[in-house]
Image (tube, rainbow, N blue to C red):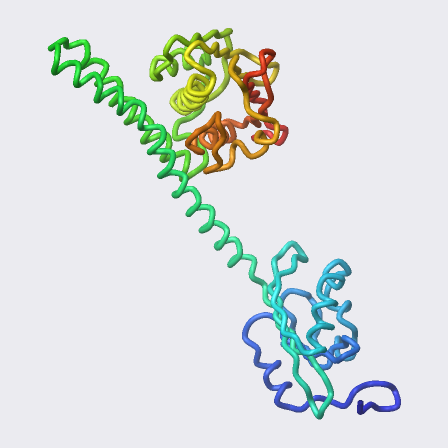
Length: 334
C-alpha cells in the first residue's frame, strides 16, 4: 500500500474529484480501507451541516452519528472487500438510502458511498402501500357485509311475489337502505380510516338491537345493558353485525350474546365455544380464518371500526368459555 510518512494514502485521481464535486443529490464519498474519507462532496453537505473539505482523512464517524456508524461500518468493510451494498438508515429524524460499491485506485482498495435523503420518497411509498391494502380490504369488506342485507332483500322480494303481502316490501326497503349505509360507511372507513360522520352520543343498546334484527339469529338470544358512547351508529352497527353473525354461526342456534358497558368502553361476549388461545393474536388480521370467523374478513372490520372510534380491542373468553371482545379507550387517545 502506498503511503506517506504520516500514514495517509496517496491522493485519488482527479476523475473522482470531478464526479464528487458535481454530484447532483445527496452526498458522495470515497473512503479507504481504514474507513477514512479521501474525497467528500459536494463541498456544502446538504443534510449534515458540515463542510466537506474538513472531513478528508477523517473516519466515517465524523459524518454519521454513533448508532448509524455501528450500522454502516460492517457494510463499508464488506465493500472494501469487494461487495456492493444497498440499505436504509435513520438519522437526524430522516430516512437516508446508502449505496456502496468497491473500486480501486492505483491498485489500492477503496469504496464509493452515496447517501441520499429519501424520507419523502419512502413516506410516499408507504402511503401507496397502505392505500392499496385499504382498497383490497374494501373489496373484501363490501362483499362480506353486503351479503346479509342483500340476502334479506332477495328473500323478502320472493315472498312478496308469492304472497302479495306488502309488508315484505318494507323489509326490502330496509335492507336496501342498509346496503346504502354500508356502502357509504365502509368506503369512508377504508379510504380514510375514520367514519364519514361526526361522532355523537349513541346508545349501544339500541344499535346492538338494530344489528340483531339484520342477522339470522335463529333461536339465539341477545342480552344488553344500558351503555352510551361517542360514535357513529352506522359504523358501530356494522361492528355488532359482524360479531353477532360470528357468534351465532360458530356458537350454535341457541347461543346467548351479551353486550354491556366497561369503565372505559364496552364488551361483547357469547356463550359459544370461543376462540382458541393460539388463534387470538392473529384473529383480527385481514384474511386470517378461524372457526369463529370463517371468511377471514369480519374481525378485520371489527378491528378497523374499533380503531376509528379510538378503542383498543382485546379478545379473551367469557365465563362460559365463549368469545369475549373488550373495547377499551386507547391509551394514546385514539
